[in-house]
Image 1 (spheres, rainbow, N blue to C red):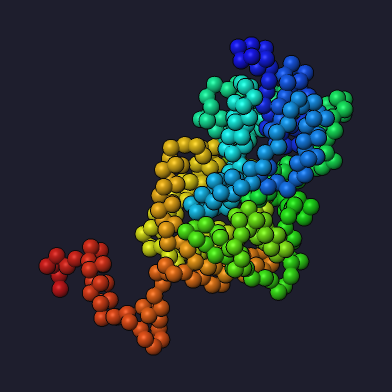
Image 2: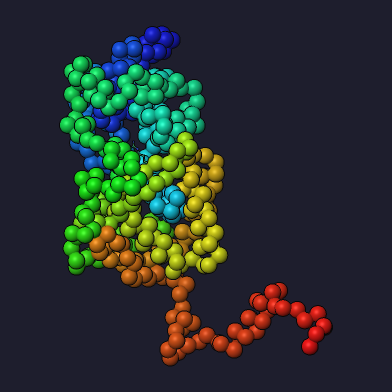
Amino acid sequence: MRSDPAATGNKVVLAYSGGLDTSVIIRWLMNRGYRVIAVCADVGQGEDLRVVRERALACGASKVFVLDLRKEFAREYVLPALKAGAVYEGKYLLATALSRPLIAKAMAQVARAEKARTLAHGCTGKGNDQVRIEVSLRILSPGFHIIAPVREWELKSRDEEIRYAQDHHLPIAKKSESKYSIDQNLWGVSIESGPLENPWTEPPEEAFRWTKNPATAPAKGEYVTIDFLHGTPAALNGRKLPLVELIQKLNAAGSRHGVGRTDMVEDRLVGIKSREVYEAPAATILHAAHSELERLTLDRETLAFKEAVAQRYSRLIYDGLWFSPLKAALDKFVEETQVRVTGTVRIKLLKGQAICVGRKSPYSRYAEKLATYGAGDQFDQSHAAGFITLWGLPYAARRNGKGR
Ligand code: ARG
């Protein structure tokens, strides 16, 4: 009955997390005459999604889709960011930012299948996530009507939302009373609000979700080796693993040693600075290992150029421009550089640090015969003097034929 607008017009596809905001949104949309189709994307947040599904239904959703997107997230979003070396403002490994375009894509797919033309999300009006989701949706499927209830509703605080939930008998999770706003997935945890809003306040230990305190981590540390195949992590400690599993195992190992905590003030796209705390053990270890392997296998000019690309690439991710032409073009460049990024990196996890202690590759550009100060040196030092003369020639003081 595709010509009947009433059959399609009041459906809304909501990106549902199971948290307080999106649970209240279900009922709020229903009270405005919508039938809510909830989409729960599993991007490795480690939540029991059966519980999330039940909660969506109990809040009044007419349908729930639980989508396991972990593999796609790892291969199509996390991996390109890793190969590109994408780190925002030198510190943030972009876990939240990378998940948003994928969640938007899933929302659009469900909307098309369900013939819904209205989409909703639970982002606030002062964050980056609203931009990432809505810009992605506009690129993927123009013509959707988008509602952002948290941006427009009358509920002015978390306490008012909790009251709304109680008044409507919504089954909200216990942790909804947490002081912190948490977003997590395979690539890391983002923690904000509560005591963290004062940038002078040290993050309380209770703010952290995954990692052990580095101060109490084992003094012995732990070694891990990671094999890369053309820039893709392929094995951990000599054992081949699918990417999702490899990341999960590294998250566990890193967490044991307090690796991957970040405390920063960052610049949001909407013009404000915010204080953010992150935990990203696997991401920290993999970025460290991948970049060390690049140092071994890439030439100096490519490395330097790639650094500039990395910075630009991280901004594209942060700014919600994942599905943009520039991002696609930069992917082609990065992919070309990864041809030689094959080899093994050995990392020591020790009290909050991931330290590279060894690297090797069949494509290594390191030549011990040229670098050595010991016997067998093949570096012809007699070339150095001429090289220096010409290298410095443009800058050497001129005598102009005067004086002396
Ligand atoms: N500041 C980070 C970003 O913009 C994390 C956002 C966390 N989002 C959340 N819903 N708690 O990517």
